[in-house]
Image (cartoon, rainbow, N blue to C red; front, side, top):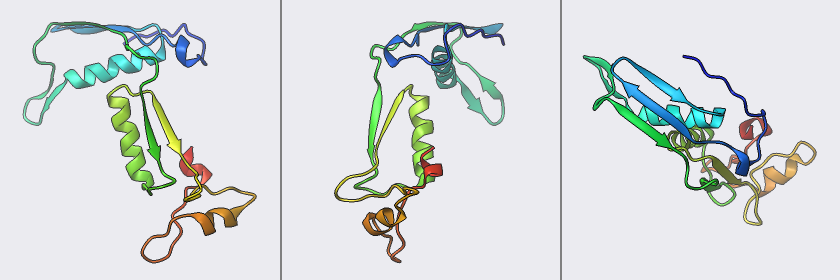
Length: 149
């Protein structure tokens, strides 16, 4: 497997080259991807093609496949409002994995609002303690800086 990335490490969202070519035959898989974004999209498509069976292992049914794909929209996103509804960190990580699988490239976290402030701030720890939602035991439901990263 060989891939060379020629794009600069930081690209503006509108300048990302996310299109790719995926050629799957019985003898091998060829991916032509001009950037890491395109490679991620190609790998997501390849994952969707895979059929995994415990007894016989992995296969890609219906070969050969030739796919040329490019997103129709630059911004493909989801808004998660954690200021009005509490979501656990493991649940958010599962959401991020599912978004990547379906090539969703933006996760907008609505972290704070007048209804709640679940984000811990180093200089003002009492804000999150007093303004966050609570569980049934009265424990503050907050997100640390490490959780958000």
